[in-house]
Image (cartoon, rainbow, N blue to C red; front, top):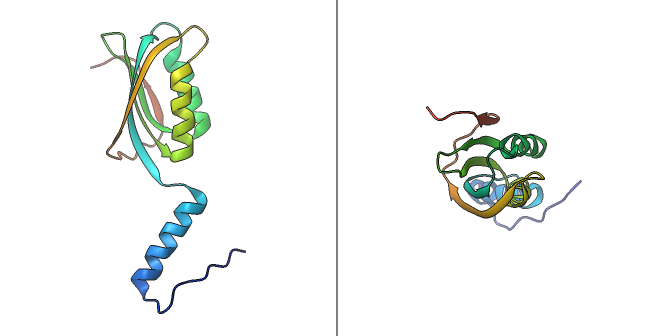
Amino acid sequence: MLIFKLPTPINISTFQLYNISTLQHFNNKMIKHIDITVKGKIQGVFYRGATKAVADQLGVKGYIKNEPNGDVTIAAEGDSISLEMFLEWCHEGPEHAIVNLVESREGELKNYRNFELIKKSL
């Protein structure tokens, strides 16, 4: 059991803020969204399928799709640790992939329910 020494005097809003920041610190489960673009020889080498498998293992939600210019676009949501490991995977890819560049930026949380492999752009 963890015991926290709270600042005194305390009011409800101070307690709520303290509790939220403490819990986030200990379980690091703050969910974030990142948009990722991967460039290189990544189409036709099972990059999307392998990336979906990794996302499912890490509990990352979102989607992955091929772009007409040869890039792969990924929207990913998860906790900081899972997203960090997921980004490391994106830099490597499966065995026959050649990743030249991975660009990522934080975006607005969409609350995806799972990780989807999008086959064709509509």
